[in-house]
Length: 495
Ligand code: ADP
Image (cartoon, rainbow, N blue to C red; front, side, top):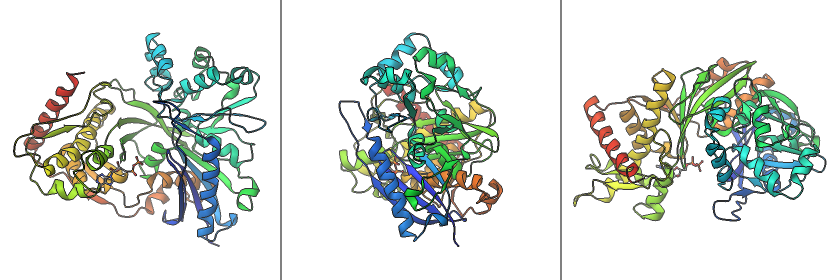
């Protein structure tokens, strides 16, 4: 009988389910978008019931498509949008309100109050994170403060908190298991990444009752069986990790010093730093990558806010291109940008620059500038922003990059990949498998279920990758980077 691993990929806009075989090949896939709720400017919510019904629906569909029964599924692994916060009643299973999504800015005043209260260093030291509304902690506070009866019910031990994988595991097990994994816990701003426990001082400071919190488990770990009614029989749930950490695992960055960049709407660059949490002084985040075989692996993470989104802007805002893919042909049609630089700081500039109020710019325009130059400058900007992160990350980790693994929608662009290699001087290895996030969740679950014996066996299943070697001369690279720094300076000086 053929057996597969089921990966549930619960993203910000869609739920997907992928069945993988022992070679990591996709056997079946199903996905569906679900409702985004924007109740006020800057507010973003999801209905947890929508998330659950969409997720279980696509899981059943993926099994039907592969003509599987529960006996064909060796284990379930989950990967999820991180930080998004759900609170529900432990008896009825009813969420007390909609989930507050990671993008939601409603709790910015809570975060500001912590920063003004001089708590930045306290949180960085314990959680590895920069105090921000992005993480779950202030979202939990908001729900307790603003939902009728929630604080009283929380204090009576009636409510449970979870990030989305916790919610899904709880629903899948028919309300029997309340657990999170180390990678997701490390994104709550409530978890001490050194003691590997919920931080009692933080809970006291934020007035969050400990009874809300899930048990923290390894990322590759049997935590319970799915209730039989969902798949016709029980399936063991054997792994979970936040989406970016799962992508790091799916890219087989198992060893310290290995890194991946996901080129999507924004970019997420993560480097595995082994069993050592690396502290950053330039705004990178220290986070838990996963825990496996009794060991915890840390990662350092940096993000570029606007990457593929700038290509969307060329398409929908400026109408310079009809499709994102066309950007590659246009960029390659000119020798260079003719001195044009785009700084797509649509929502400020993140690490390592940190100018939240910077606006975007296009500089160096001459009469000879055409649309191909602007399009090329846009793709180059994605690579420059990544190069800035690569530089600080290499420095702070004391280990220069030897190569960088790439995935995500915009990694399909060969021009971007080659320019990335040229401008960083680092080999880029693009994954042949576009589903690295789901694959990471499958690997984590499959390892604890014994589907794969160990990570060495997983490495043996790897398929070929596209490689992009750096060819640019040192002097040309230095010249282009100097121009980029000048362009960044022009937007930050206006901040
Ligand atoms: P997300 O998961 O963040 O929604 P995806 O990984 O699906 O993102 O990637 C989509 C993004 O990649 C879009 O912003 C799109 O503009 C960009 N993109 C897709 N294909 C290309 C391409 N060939 N060249 C450049 N950008 C691309």
